[in-house]
Image (cartoon, rainbow over all chains, first blue to last red; front, side, top):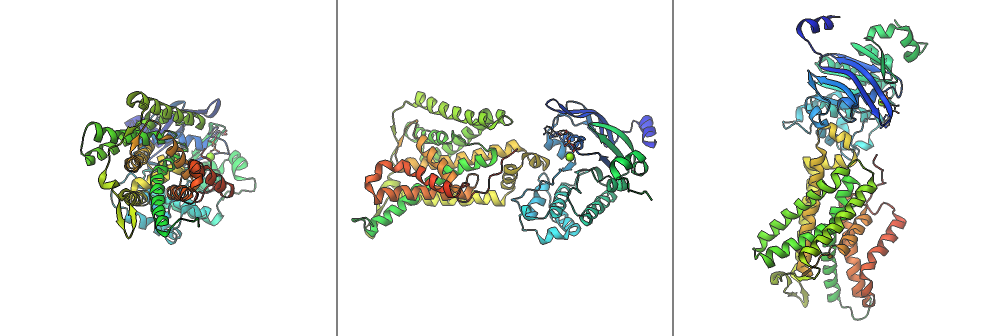
Length: 251
Length: 301
Ligand SMILES: Nc1ncnc2c1ncn2[C@@H]1O[C@H](COP(=O)(O)OP(=O)(O)O)[C@@H](O)[C@H]1O
Ligand SMILES: [Mg+2]
């Protein structure tokens, strides 16, 4: 509400603004005209079942898949049509679904390659990431392909942090991880956000995601069907039914 | 051991095998690097090698430039040729099926061979002599051509430099990243096209040095001179495990030694010299389908 007001009064635009985005793979329409906003400094989550079009949306933002129509602006600048490297250079980073660490590169090299576009000294950043994920420091010289799934996810997050992004997008960081590791990842997400990083989080683990999110969108077969604060959606009966499991009880 | 083979000749043959093998290795690296990054067998690589030989021939024998100037220009032009081929014939097909890319490579190969035949005639031209490189010298009753010793040394230096670039520099790290995953590499801010161009530049530069050394050892140039070495070095790359630079070096050396020693031990088989590459290829692939140092091949999606 306040955002809406500000927008009208001062022409305020959110950090990331998606309008009427459509993406298709050949004949298959994966994203059918969605609107989504990510205000600076917030955690926004996009939840939805498998195949809803969540990954497609994120991949369209960084132009790893071409949007059919619509608009995606970052601080008011149009991103559609820009090369992925240009978009990343603006301070947007994606932790892709399935982690995609470089298996033949060492842990340290994976972190360094995350800072590929930086020319300054990386030592402080590497130490910071090793502080967050001590497991990575122990395995610094190991090939990333030999890490466990959880360690690879930590590495993927660490690698993304190395570019010092302003907007960090994560595609199902909890997928396939043990509950304890998932909790760790969500703790890090909240910590990064407290430091001022804006986060767009995609999750099937709706429960966890809605708890950390300032604002949330629900995507169903390519369309946004619900939006609200994390708290609102946690309390929403239809969301409970569809995404949180019937046994879920809201405190 | 075959009667008549003395220790001296055996040593000579070993040196000879090492120099032939080093030449193969230099050329094989180009195949393996391009395959590693594009999953493409660059059929034009042997013809890039041939063009480099002509660049050197023209520089020295036609334009009478000093040899060192010629070498630098040759390496530069060959790199440019490799980069241009990728730019014009492969990049537009980046998202096309791999077969289209392969056909384009074969097309470039034919084009270069025919352009060379048209421009330079199909006749072999004598490559200028390098007396410094070819006048034999003697150590304890053994006679060596200096070039046979210079080739492995130059090859060793270049391969060490290449391994350093691949493993220790930023662009090398980018090459290794692009070789496994274009999309994630882009997310790191790596410009894929630049990395691919660098790969072609390096592979072509090594082929150029290979061509210069080759012509010192076998002083003649002709438009189809790249066909057989190209095929053999491709085989060398496959034997070693295509995509793996050390494998290409290993494969090149194995081929070089086998050829030279086979001819030395069994002179009657001299006519089959070019066939041994295939025999070794078949034997190795029967037992190690991914080559000696190759990893299990993961199809790129
Ligand atoms: N590369 C692709 N080619 C064709 N269809 C795809 C491709 N990627 C995703 N899709 C389809 O697009 C839809 C949305 O997929 P995706 O964005 O991956 O969903 P989510 O991330 O929400 O699970 C699905 O129907 C999926 O099958
Ligand atoms: Mg997905």
